[in-house]
Every structure is written in C-alpha cells, then in structure tokens.
Image (tube, rainbow, N blue to C red):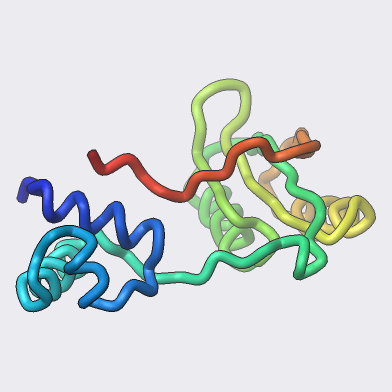
Length: 153
C-alpha cells in the first residue's frame, strides 16, 4: 500500500515523539482523532511502525566507548554463520550487526564502559567465537551526527 501525506506526517511526528497522545498527533497532522487513530493502527499492523522505545543517554549509563568492529570469518558454511549469529544475538554490547560487502564480512557497532571493558569483551568473548578469522576495530572519537528518524517524505 502506498502512503499518503497524512500517513507520512504521522510517521514523521511519531519518529520525533513516540509519546504523543492520539489527540496531539491528530492535531499535529491535521486530522480528527478517530481517523488518526485508525491510520496509526493500520501503520502498526502493516509493519511501518515496528515499536515505540525510549532513547537512553549512554553517558548517563557509564557507556563511553563506541566501537565499529570489522569481522572476517574463516568461511561461510551454515554452521559457522549460525555460531556467529548466535554469539551476536547473545551479546548486549553489540548494538548492530550488518553483513557487508568489501574487505570484511560483518560490521558490528559495539558499546562499552571504557577501553579496558572493550578489550575484555574483544579477547574474552568476540574472539572466542568459532569461525572468526579476524577483527579490526575503529573507535568513535566524537559523534557529530546521530539521527534515528528515517526519511519518509
């Protein structure tokens, strides 16, 4: 189904503030409350809206190190991929895992308290996963942009 301007406005508004009441959302997008509510329910049912979450402040939680790890596997056999994917899913430090093209197989976004914690995670957890040939890490020195809103327009 294609999205009309009201659907797009709803998605944009909810990305900015997922806690908007239906009344406030309807007012913001130019609809009355009942049609707005029906549209939001349809967007949820059709999978456009996956979830509503709180965005936390990493520094308040003592998380200071953001790392991007390029992971290369020994091979791409089913058991190697299953082992790797299981390990990734079980590690809360790994925020994102992308299968990528280029010189490595996966790009991981990892968060830790400090460098010592990252080194412990790397040597004690990640490099212990069977099938990982190498890991090359880049550290974020400063984050100049963080946008969680997808372009819907």
